[in-house]
Image 1 (cartoon, rainbow, N blue to C red):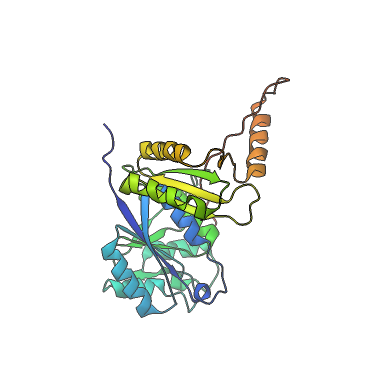
Image 2: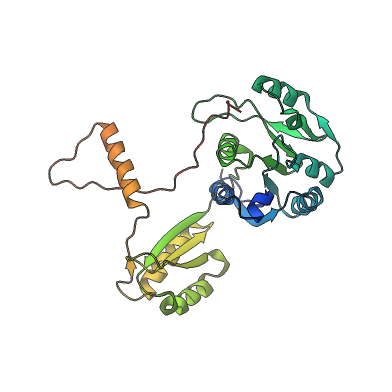
Length: 296
């Protein structure tokens, strides 16, 4: 029996003065959006807020009522400006209190100055993930309150946590399909065709158009995105028929990287290419790196 289709939405709240001031380049938004979409979750809104308890609390309270899932990033460390736990407690009328399991985890980590890590909202839940590569359980849990999940802002830690707890967010009833087409013409010359295509497919499909001025091979990348695989196939056929002949070109992003990976796989397989045979390189969207969080 097929899993019923279900639309699950998410809101992401990035927390930190360093992002708003331009001191830190935000890579977490890209990672979270890409990973959640691969899990069948539709990211509906992203917000960046400063290190202010009231501002964070208001945003969390608002997001929690508007989206199925809320993910916060940052502000859960041991220093004075790590105030996410306090803000989330205020958002839901909770009190901050030490959690026995977190106290034990902090003792296991050793060192000093980490007392703040154990003070969480009174209704907090703890989620212990397992490294999918090694099977080693993480020593420190992810904290959540209601439908709000509080992630560390350090990119490496965040990737490990979500990699080890992906089943918490996986939406089995939804799968998104993406096709990328590369066009040699200027965007203005294909705008009318893309507009007609979007009108033809309506809400079944999203068509994106992204000029690339740095490429000497193509001018526009066109994306076809849908939760219906058939719609993506139909849209590709539609554009192939309506765009000027020869304007669609084959293109493999990061071709050198993919070629290296293919050669490595070929070497590991122990097979060899016969004279005159062709080596075919296939590309796929790589899963986010997932490493053991046992060191934290």
